[in-house]
Image 1 (cartoon, one colour):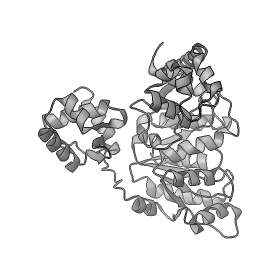
Image 2 (cartoon, one colour):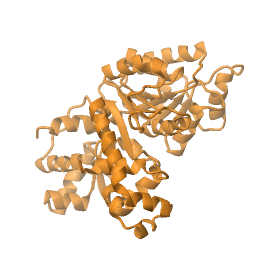
Image 3 (cartoon, one colour):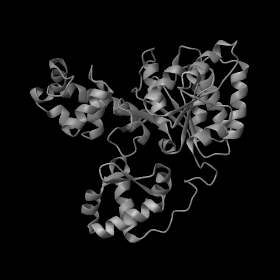
Image 4 (cartoon, helix red, strand yellow):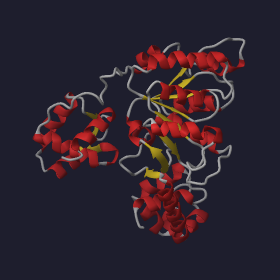
Length: 381
């Protein structure tokens, strides 16, 4: 096996190369494969790369063997792999600077194209926390979105369960290998998540034992995958507040549920609200209004695709094959063989129809909410 995926998995195995440095190396040399074939002296021109790391990269065969073994394990276990250079890698996660180079998953990855609400909180909630989620999901089920959480005890697992009960797909981000669900008590609900069009996701290869250092790393993925993070009950210290602060760092919205001033599980939420790190959340309508979402059942996924001209269809086909579903106008002109006046007119029409949005660098990108229907429509085109 000699694929980009093999080299990207191998890159994640090298000590001292984390998500940020790994991404810098790929950007500097064009691909993970080229990183492994670059001379040590040139590698050390990248800040953070010293002799130790360049020497490890020089011994690429051992890392490729290990990566091959991981990919084989995934194949046998039914675990899928996506990498940061793949077109199916979650688009929101690509926006954060420390996005994982590799994700391992089972289930429906495409649900991550929908509006996403992360729900986090204490592992020991009060009856008030459970009651709030009952009411919240009763109102939330009318909208077309997904939820995210970490499959932990307390608020996390209850949010997953309420999502399932409400017919809302849910994604669980784990802090260990997918073949060793943690905590073991939640193996049953993990299976139910998958049966209900959900997703299990991690950056850890199979057989990775869960340990404390993996939880903050897991929390950054939850924050990065979400549009908004909801903190239901939390103490002043803990994973829920870490996730909220990461979400703020990533320019995601954060909302917190107020509670009793006499209960310690409300302290974290009140702190976030008082310090203007979170908006106050009392009901689902507050969230939808803050985000400015049109999430009625007639959502983007359910809308009919507008009529498209031959040139517009050609543009969409090109964008569906592009990284991040995005291309510059120059690249679109080259690959479509269209003259600029006709190309610009078609791009403008697609923007008016709400299918594309203009991006920096004179480029255009498919609006994420349209991806599922465009992929279905153009699969056999």
